[in-house]
Length: 623
Image 1 (cartoon, rainbow, N blue to C red):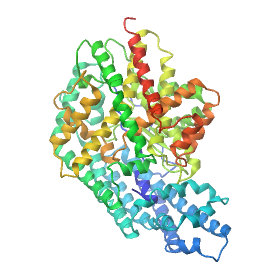
Image 2 (cartoon, helix red, strand yellow; image 1 turned 135 degrees about the vertical axis):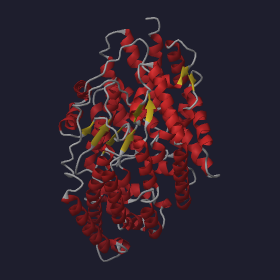
Image 3 (cartoon, one colour; image 1 turned 45 degrees about the vertical axis):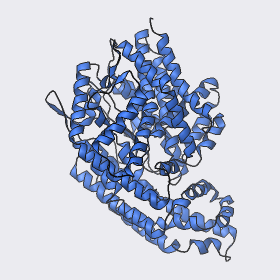
Image 4 (cartoon, helix red, strand yellow; image 1 turned 60 degrees about the vertical axis):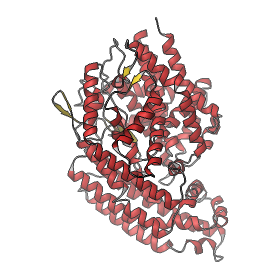
């Protein structure tokens, strides 16, 4: 649980999807333009901003620490005066969050560009330490506000100025039952630099430095993951064995990191009073445990009609009873899959977005025109893809390792959806712009769906249509079925960790159990697959993050069904949802669409959308 500016340390939106690639010319791909942040690590403005933050925070601490209760409960001022004083304090707090957020954003982004560079590693570490030291001075603010009786604060929230921040006050109150004393909160915050943050960095740097041998070539993890989806079956198998071998050789390291972080989380949960291993994530996501339980149960119940059925169909296409695990995401046989140039990918996405909403396309155009995308894959660059919101006074940045395959186009559409969402939510300010993970996937998955439908409409023949449908189904299975199986894996890990350290063998056993259950009998889990859990960064960076993907995909499937049924006026309601950022609960966000995530029919609607695509694939048999 992170209070206030501590949340800035965990702002990056990760989507480590296995982007694909072949022989693609990356020389013209864009890189980030950081001129809106800093000109370099040695930019004098970095130190100037830190000095400004130090000055502002010291003044803020002197003005309000230990004095909020008297300020808001005393009889010496009117309700209007109290509201004005509190509003001034909140705005100062927000401004400091924005200032420091810009610094940590820059430090993280340049690190992600080259995670093996010692200078960037040191810069990020130094910035994290300084940010932690400064943010601990402001911890008192939210803690003291939560100790004041709501009867003294609620009347103030109806007064102009402070009324805007009413959702934020409601939000921090959710943390109240689990907050500790000021001293303990400060200790947790300060120790985070040598605790979870340190292990996160070690994992990232280790993964970026690992090399996997394929045909005598030493490759980074991203390149090997690309090969696992190659059209060449022999290459897929070689890449899979290389991945297994290196992960196995580093199994003790990955197991140790997993044990340390699971224990670290368990200690925090015990002190805060969380009863379930995933309760803190549900709180951070502003979603009720019963809603997540219903999602998990619904997806698991649907395994036979979704993943089991699809992989049986794909095995038939490959002429086997069982697919090797390295063939699970392979392109369909005998279907040409040409690389897509960066320019074509841009045009495809912009057209799909513009057909839905000109405003959405105009915002997306900024990412291409103004240096907000880093697309070139390079040794040492963070794998996968993500969108980073930075802070409301700046703009989001998108990272992708673009290698030209159709799935890369979808990944780019996904991340740009995040970027549009973050851009629109900026109007909520630094305190309310961040969106809970369950809703953070809304625009990204919706953007993917728009792009997919646009591309599918242009399919020239049955074979091409089958290939595109299959690719989309696989993406949806990876987003829903696989992520729920990942959630089940994490639950097994964190529950078992309570009884002592876990071994490599135990972790591999858990991984095989959830994989077998979710993938079904048509996928052969080959020797070495038991180590694949170890490269998933979500398990390290954000425990139980993964179910947000399934939540978002099912939510978008339901939203898309609403859009197709009643397109008139949908875009306006959709943009209202995105602009709300983190200022509303998911129930408020979905109400205008007539959707309710607490109802089983909501999840069924989302899952049936996947089943319908598989139906369409089956209908193409023999054509």
